[in-house]
Length: 522
Image 1: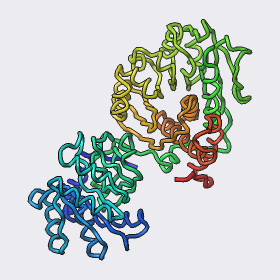
Image 2 (image 1 turned 60 degrees about the vertical axis):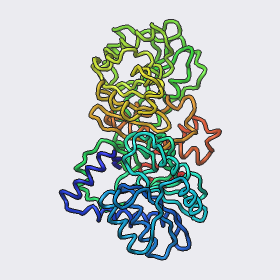
Image 3 (image 1 turned 30 degrees about the vertical axis):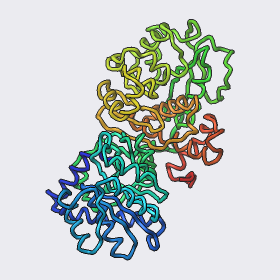
């Protein structure tokens, strides 16, 4: 599913109006009607309910005026508040305001503090508040009297529904104004907006519904495509075909180089994910110091090898790195490595010789002090940083990465020619061509140590089967989130463990492939 930025949405609108010939008033009428149909589904009916609608001066306000007219014409109680006179509105909004006036419904003009009291009274006697104050044009903080209006809107017991975007949410970044309208539902028009699916915008948006306003496909396509929402339908087309005639050699072979004397379980957890990925062989290489001393149970299907060790961690010579590169095409490196100069040297040596696909996770990312290693090494790389690791790679702050997750991931992917899986409550996946995929399925049950190791193993295993780098990243992220949702539905978020999530990965695969119904509660 495409996610539009504000500029892309405006470009699609212009194309529909100027190239296809659909008048802007028709698009606005469609937006209002389809919004009402969606609101009726959300509320379980309209009859007997009372509505308050707040409309700004732009086209978002015009949508609200259309909604108000159709509610009024169907004998549904509705109070309408506007923040501008018809002369101050955009042309289409002005026309719809004048039409509304001629039907006999007179909006209340919100201009002074005492007008807010009339708004409070209207909301008190309404079952639903509809927000049409701002559309896609907000980027900074809303100030002045408009800020007072939003704070008043937030102070209601009525169901809150925003049309297109909650007022104060940036369509491009998900950044929110202070104040922001905290809605229960967002009815987004035509195509979903990127800011609705990344934090903090996702929290402000509530439950997102999409209303089809009749935007021609050719107009949507004219705006280009750079952001996509990861959905089961997308992922089902990315998973490799399982041929009953395949054997373990043709199913792929993965080398995992992980662990240290300090972190013995990281590689084991990564191997759990890899074994659940569909790859034919999983080889776990641990430092020699763990031979016969591992405190973690390694599954019997995993082939265990040992590599030279110094001071509890890996020490890899150029000759050994070249040997491994010659024998394996897919490698996961980094989980549980720990940090020291000897280990950093081992990793640099390995990457400089690696000619295949390498997934770099955890301490592997912390040991890469120079991102030019990724640019200059011969292999192809998928990196899986959390916010802190990404901040170190980009030499910036965690706050900056968190506030600009999409742009940071995209810029790093393009500059370093790698696939970036930037992990957080919402995970952003970026590829060197500039495309970005958003997995917007936050789950507090995943907020546990080891979930990143499990994910990196799952992605690496998918890559070993022959799936492209970007497809392995997208599918791995979604399969893990699906498994986590199933686990939460079965066990609850409080006590579910990462090992238990691993055990539900098979059900997640079956759900995505449509083999049987294992959908968790919405």
